[in-house]
Image 1 (cartoon, protein in one colour):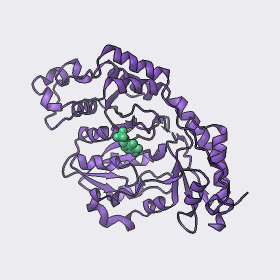
Image 2 (cartoon, protein in one colour; image 1 turned 180 degrees about the vertical axis):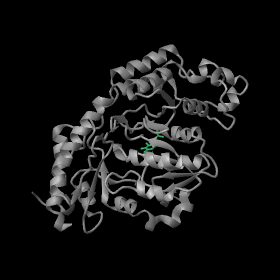
Image 3 (cartoon, helix red, strand yellow; image 1 turned 90 degrees about the vertical axis):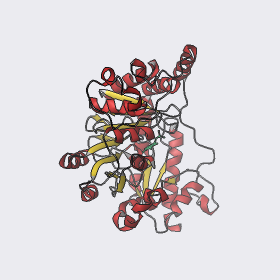
Length: 405
Ligand SMILES: *Cc1c(COP(=O)(O)O)cnc(C)c1O
């Protein structure tokens, strides 16, 4: 193989990679139909049917229940809103602690601040980057009320172990499955086992509606609270709550406007139908890359496949063991592969400032993952066999030249 592009050689890939599949005829038709009705939001902030949203919003929620085999789905205007609503629905508030991961999109932890509670950062597993149950267990105090478990990059986290901790200590489990629609954990869809599971419909996610989110739950009273948080809560229903809520007390809910519009709901419904078609190629492409890169261990460590689990491969992650951190990352980028480190650990963000004292000793795996792991999106359904071949070739080239880095 020729010289590394980093040192002036010819890059493996010079043209850009294809983008993810765009929206199709079904989505366009769905949008036109909504425009034809003129009803862009069916929500009314008053008791009665309109409290639960318009026809597209309800159709999306029904389809979501059917697809993920859950009794309740509550759409929102983002996963961030849904995470916040999930905490409020689980009665988390000031004085409570919530155990979260420091290595995720910021909303996985800032939702706790939004709810007025205190995020407590646990360490992560070295191989799949979900919360490490041993670290979580050590952080449980009398104040702990909930755990937010992120299925990072689409990989199912250690649900059984975390569920056991929740059961032992009476904690609520909120699954952040924003990156993992369609990922499977022991015959269940990820996101459907906790008290609340949250999915994102943001433009960058596997299925998208521009912006949007869905919270799912198996618990009737939690679903009710989610709907209240979404639509101005008590302010609206207090007078005639019996009609909407029966006898359950909800006097602690300050609701907002987290409602999803009819157009994004219609798009999301069409996108949901495509979920398998968009996820299957991700698995095929990721496994093909993994099979080859696994031969180059321990320089590359490929995503672990856990027994009876299946990742949705939102991003493809590789751990690189190199003597000069960052050199292989640069070499890969020079070969035309847009690899990136994942986000800075959240305890470095000023907004989480109070947590900063604990960092380095307490989160060695987060620090190591942040240093060594790169991610790229080049497993999506728009990638051809040849495109994936180029990704593999670039990784192989950097491997073969690893001593020059
Ligand atoms: C994208 C993402 C979110 C936030 O989703 P939005 O719909 O953009 O609010 C939350 N958690 C994780 C893990 C995400 O990847």
